[in-house]
Image (tube, rainbow, N blue to C red; front, side, top):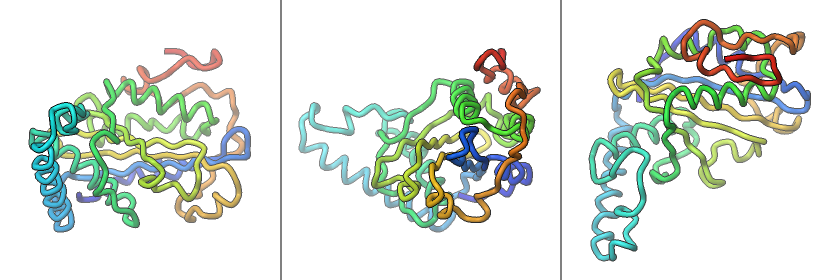
Length: 248
């Protein structure tokens, strides 16, 4: 996967780190864009995953249809018997490896990912999560979804999320209160935007964050601000009525 350095993402990432309205927690988010261009290490990963699938397939032949995971587990990417489905799984795993280079996600299974019904649903979920913890006005007025749309064309994306277990969670040592990991995948552009975010709860966890990640938001933001990522159709559709302040 080839990392794409998008300048507007750098600005957004600085605004995606902020203290919650309660003051005892801190939100740290990150947006990264990747081209699905297979490099040397990615080729090795793809061969590994394909060999693993073939081994699983051979083992499945010795099992009954009821026992075979390959025939019973519904992949969010489609049937794993199809190479296109396995390639999507590979792209997501390769993105995680590139985003968290200190971790190896090659052992992940397809059932650790889910496919969202639409980009709008993902946007609503992300907006609600950030609003509920008191995202600062600098973020609410940053046209975030317009910027993401410019990079990935949201209407043409499939959206997947990753819910790690304790062994495969790159944030496990921080013990976050919550976290999310979304992949916006545009097959036509052969590009992925990865949006990851977590909320940490105490000073020890904050001390573990890098200086680059820990960029505080504007503590003087007024809580009454009602504008959230304005102008784009995705931002408008993603707005939710919270406490009477935001409207569709």
